[in-house]
Length: 496
Image 1 (tube, rainbow, N blue to C red):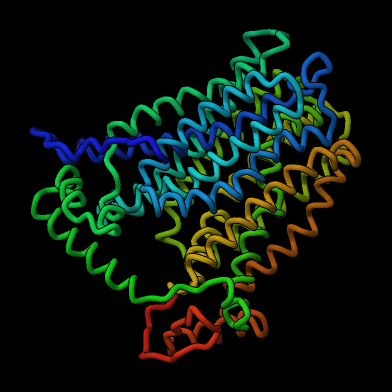
Image 2: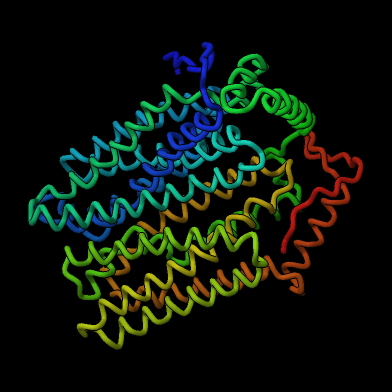
């Protein structure tokens, strides 16, 4: 981090409209989500061409490695960049992540063999994981409190939009460039465009005022706030930031040593479980291998590319629906509806792939069912799962709990991405979906228990722990695992 990246708002700027500048900051920053989405979605269409004998000549195992190596890198990128952004600043980390996106995308695009491709995909994963951890934090700290949820959600929409754009460009390139052997290289290199916009934009975007305040640089924090708020609101928000930082410094956060305490360990394990079961249902197998699933069902490669756009469109639309429903529908009915829909779609995928193998109608049935699966997942299951994961940890456990849970989520994502093409190659389409179905049902049962008030075993134990936590504020000792009991604190999470 030796290069000095000058903050554009440390100098005086006149006649700048705070609202317009705030919109510009949000627009530039969410390109981190866009390039994240494009890089995770582009492999969907690139693999069929990359696997050809005159290209990288991939088998099922090496296909899995190429696709999933990015996810393995993302697990470590998310952890490392969270700490780096705390130390060096959100803006500076995003700036270097943009450079890493550009360099690793070029490395993947010009990879001469499988080994080099896997290496650069892993390094690209570091940038993807870093963006997933840093960009939402930056947006949350830059946004006004009343718009924070909406603007942070915009990053999620840009992520899904990035995946949709990857599917669209894959289809356009595949259907306009014929059988050119290097089609996949053109698909990959397009990811440099949003990365370059993100990199250039970081010369315009200021540092987070909250990060400045956390380092005691209150003058710079106020100057940033004056650029994105009205004067009276800027001073008021700075006072709120100071109060928040003062309160946080009084809280001793949990460490890995505190996992020896039974109730701490139990909540962290719960968070890990929620993160893992969100992935083992097979959602990302469709997102990463949708084109190959459609190929196996009977579509030609170029037709499968076009058909796969439907998966991206429904994911984007369902994300809008899910965001709208979260504030209007109770979580448990929403979750159960989503679980019934996704389980039914997965069961029917396996059934029709088995009974209608070779039928000209099968590709269209598979396409319809994958769209149905994604619609229920992105519109109901995903939003509720992520919201629950963000709420189950008390403040003292939030850092270590979310860090461990998200790391496990990425690792599970990596394993699914690795084994799915092997399963398809070894067992076929229908058997693979049937293998995932028991895992799907088991994870559905666990998530329903987590959110059900009347559970007689698991949930009752969880609620008992949470009730005890609400009645007693726990202060962790940094030198031992002993605890001191303090005053009542009823700011606890909601399970319904």
